Amino acid sequence: MVKADSMRSQLRRAMPAGFLLLGVLIGALLVIAFGSGDTTSTPSPAGSSASNSSGGGMNMGTSATSGASAGGIKPVPMQQLGVADWQGMKITADAMTPVPFIVYNGTTAQEIKPAKNTSFHLMVLLTDAQTGVVIPYASVWATVTKGSAMPFDARLWPMISRYMGPHYGDDVSLPGAGTYTLTLLVSPPVSARHLEYQNVWLKPHQVTFTFHWTPPTAT
Image 1 (cartoon, rainbow, N blue to C red):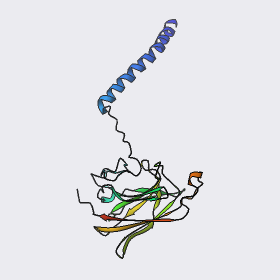
Image 2 (image 1 turned 135 degrees about the horizontal axis):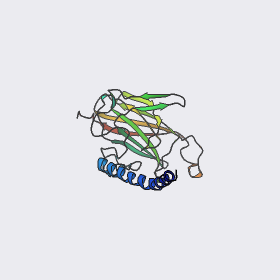
Image 3 (image 1 turned 90 degrees about the vertical axis):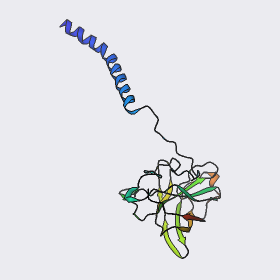
Image 4 (image 1 turned 30 degrees about the vertical axis):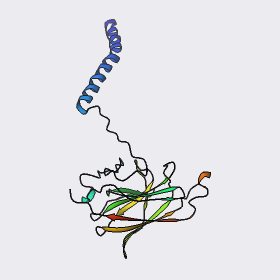
């Protein structure tokens, strides 16, 4: 009985070292199998140039340069449609590859998938022009026209994204290539405000951009 107790005591003292050695061996095997490179990406600052066709690090769930998006939609290189300033609020409109998104109303969730004729996902970002901080709690109505045609006229969804934060967006279908007019009606943020914002954004404001759209070619 004494021998058994002595052996148990020796095993308890040896267990921590044994677990440590086992952990080192497992870690070494994982490094060999998967490598030690850092695969995280840093999102671009809000309102950055849209000349980066990879989407400026703002991966919304699909690549903007290769592969096919959901529902057979062709990838759309990130394109800046326009930038405006409203009393220190920077209004940026971008086009990107359509991706599915979820509409949650507090009790139920509905997945919205892009139709096959969707041209791009319209994304409007409102930020403080000086600090780059995102401004939420507003609403944005978007209208796209070409001559007398009006292929899009709707209130954009208030959306959240890991890389973009609060913004406003929806999928847009255009009849083809050409020059279009995008009109945004931005309503004042409905929220309590700190004093630096007490005298700005008190009435709805409209901005208009002209952009040229060319459907992406098959890859």
